Image (cartoon, rainbow, N blue to C red; front, side, top):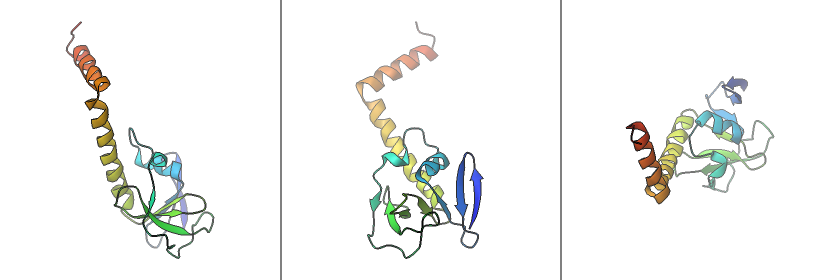
Length: 128
């Protein structure tokens, strides 16, 4: 397991499988969404049985979990860190982007959102 820095976060990468482990806050930085923080989403346990893999940070049990059906990622039951297999970071980013899109649709569909759209349109077209 090797430690590396991606942007402002520390990630631990498995040299054998190319999986990564990082804290929840670090994962938010890696995903870089506009509206959604991973910590604000309900992380649902998919299978309460631990994977048998120890957390590289605290040796706690990694439990299969998800925020949006796919991907199934492992979350440490002790320190709340996340283990992502190779490719799951991109898959998780797409899942959170879908949640962001739904949030934006709700905002823009509200009365306040429609007023914001009208004000922005007025501003960009030079209407006074």
